[in-house]
Image (cartoon, rainbow, N blue to C red; front, top):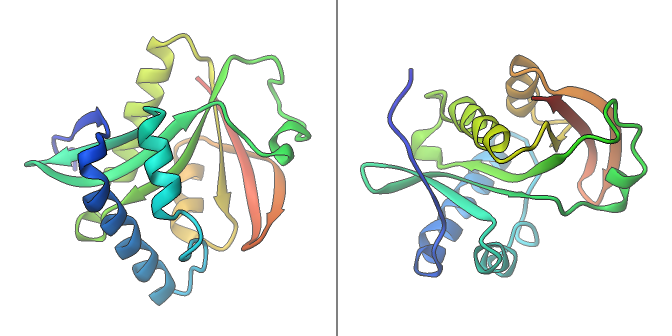
Amino acid sequence: MNEKITYTIAEAGEIDEIFTMYQSAIQTMCKAGIEQWDEYYPDRQILTEDIAKKELYVGKMNGVICLAYVINRECDDEYKSCSWNYPDANYCIIHRLCVNPGFQNRGLAAQAIRHIEAECRKNGFDEIRLDSYSKNPYAIRLYDKLGYTVVGHADWRKGRFDLREKKL
């Protein structure tokens, strides 16, 4: 299903809707036994900073925010010490991809990733990196299906995360 999503850089005035969406997604994940996010991450301050840096993007359908994600080059030390397959690639990193629970199970995450890949190619990047929670079967299936290879791991507060990459 390829529903029409409009992608834009998030605006400060959208923080309430964005934060509510993330909180709803956290509740939905917890009910499914996925303890990836919580009240500490991602919190309102992190999302507000993402907006201020113009790194948080939203996808809208009929004027409603159906998803959000961050694109930048910021990463933790675990990324820097990973044995990437393409260490010299001009890469960007996807963070905090979130689909509004009211829009889940419609293929929107995959559609968003394909949009991100096209935008990154257009902007001169040749690789995308990301991390995914090793106990989130939905994320694992999504990134495997879209060709993101696990090249390492990071052990953070919530557990093990797979470090993944895809050459564009």
